[in-house]
Structures are given as C-alpha cells and as structure tokens.
Image 1 (cartoon, rainbow, N blue to C red):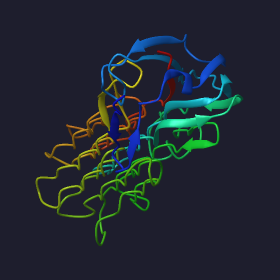
Image 2: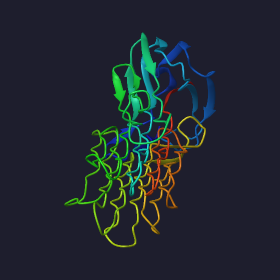
Image 3: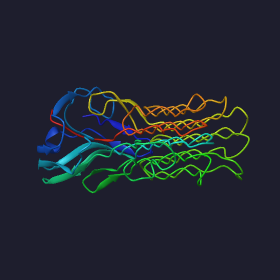
Image 4: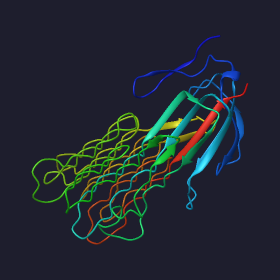
Length: 324
C-alpha cells in the first residue's frame, strides 16, 4: 500500500497513512465534545483518499472545564490542538499604530500513539475586550488561554503591543504579538517571541518617526511583518496560518496573526492567511476581529480618544482516526 506523507510547516515529514485501520485507536466515550461524525478523506490535510475517518471536536463554550476522551482501543490518532488567539491592545489618547495580535499556538500531530485510557482536553478562549484603554488584554480575564490534549499544551497567542506608552514590545505566546510605536524611541520595538514548533515571532513596530506604525502578529506558518519605516505609515502584515484546511472534512482557517495598525493616512497591515484580523484602515479606529480558529486580532490606529482593541478568536481541539 502506498504511504501518503505530509510535510508540515516546521520541516519534519510525517507518515499519515499506510497502516491498516485496526492499527488506529478507537474512542468509546467523550465528554464536552460535539457529536462525533465520519468523513471520507480526499488526500488533503494528510488524509488517505477514500479512507474513512471518525472525528471528535471540542470548541470553547464560555463555561469551559476539563473534558475527556476515553480510548477503548490503543493505537494511533491524528490530532490538531489550537490555543486562543491574541488581541490587539486597546488605545488611549495620543496613541499611534498598535501591534497585531498573534495566533494561538498550534500542535498538529499525525500517527500519535495513545493508550487505552482517558486523555484530558481543554480549549482556550481568544482575547477579548470588556472596556477601553490600556489595561485590557493585560487583565487575565481578557487574555487568550491555552488549549491542551493530554500532556501537550498549545500556548495562547501573544497580544499586540499598545502604542504610545509602555515598552511597546509585543507579548510572547504560541506566536508572538507585534511591536508598536510611540514618541522618543530609539530603534524598533521587537515583536514577541513564539513557542518553538507552535508558531512564529511577531513583527517589529516602527518606533518613532518615520513610521509610527505597528508590527504584525506571528502565525503558525510565518513570522509577522515589520512595520514600515517611512512616511507611508504602513502597519506590518500578520503572519500566515493554515487556510482552507480540511483536517476534519470541514474547511477552516487556523492560527493566523493580525495585521499591525498604521498611522495617520497610512494603512493597517493585512491579517495573515487563515483568518487573522486586519490592522485598522482608518485613523481613530480599532483593527478587525479575527475570523479563523485561534487567530489574532488587528492592531489599532492612532486615536484621539480611547478605543477597544480587536478580538482574537477561540481555539479548538480535534481528534480523528481511521475506521475504514
């Protein structure tokens, strides 16, 4: 039987088929999961064309606790675990271009061995606002959360840096948030670092003149773009995630970074492929909220008053295994 392979974004070649269905695990029960279903592989997302897969999926619910999946038959599974995406910082008076929020960390495993036992599952929320100004996305109630499968943790996406005040450095996470800008800075404030194997760093902000714009948040596939260093005042683009990826037979985007905010008549950066939010496209506005799974929100653009930051999106955990 031919062996199908998928080369993942971090360079390791994974065997994703070639074993008979009896070598795959089987789950007898789950808690907190959506209703299990099957789909037929078409050769994309590492599936065997014509192979039949059973799927268990967990979404963030707002009342999240720790859930579980019990395997009655040991063997191998494929799973995708994505943390919540980071947000763009809220703006306060005299702000410039803010950094884009980062993608939540993503763990994508093929032929992962499990025993006949119960594995815990949790799904992280995306960063969201409850008010305006600089404190939001610093308070733990509003930051993104990790997602877990068994002993493995996908790390929450880092928030984009607030402009004008503070360090202007992007926050670390599964992927790192974009750096920002402000007056009287030397050099470009760096984007936050990502977590090895789960995502990439955020782009640098432009700092002070010329530029005053925010860097893009990092994504699963690529690093966030640096902000422009000229009077075009352009925000950096968000790092790319996975787009139209049918891991469970349903096409979705995953783990893209948000674009950085521009300044004055400049444009915000474009959100990363897979559903990152765009940086703000008009002065005195926030960026776009994230659209994909575990994606970062766009950075804000200079404002004369306080505004919300853009929201990151919730994570997800998916387990699949062949049954035919």
